Image (cartoon, rainbow, N blue to C red; front, side, top):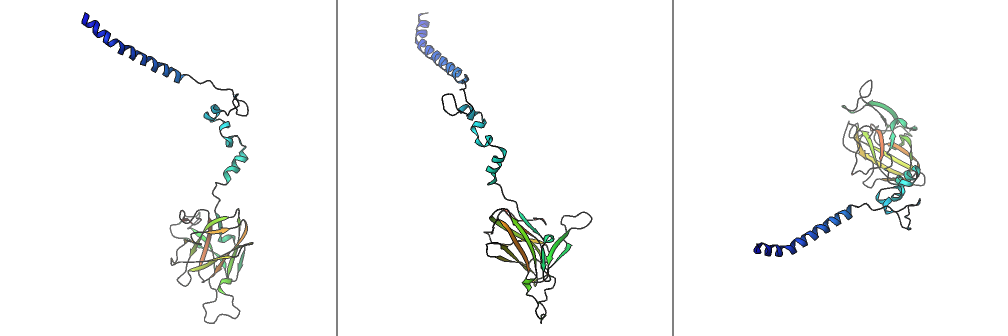
Length: 253
């Protein structure tokens, strides 16, 4: 019996210390789970003491988000700078003027292209079938090859850099190039030659270098000019995405 009492005396301090620890843990748990009373918040999102409302911010209320409190029109305007502007398209069938022997025609698109209602796929294009320059002795006063042209008008919504593509078809190695000229008010004309070796197949080619072309806001005239007869052009796509991230694949881009 005396031995048991001695053991109990030795263990008693440890039992007391362990109980205190348990009581402290329970007290902390109760304190952390107790809800924090919300401070009064006035209409301006301020607490009664004059500080900003942490409660409103934590709850994700309009006080924490100025954009959420703005009108729909103001919110749309705030995001406008981040939107990708729409692509601009010049379509052969929308030509305003034809000069010289440049004409508008319709013919078959690539085999396997999207089928149109009522028949095989078709494509409209501008071209100069015969510019009269292949003759050994051209007619007196015959215009230069580049004077045969189709004229278009483009409305540019905002000044920015575009990455233009052209959809073309070449007859042969003597008719595999065409000229595109851009004329904007207050800017010098920009003229580019498009050429490659893919024959008798509609395909897209870049019109500018890697840096693209800057177009000013407003009206811009686009001239598709003959360089070698037999070359055809269907579309010009002024793309907002750079050459490195986008290439058109369909007839419309």
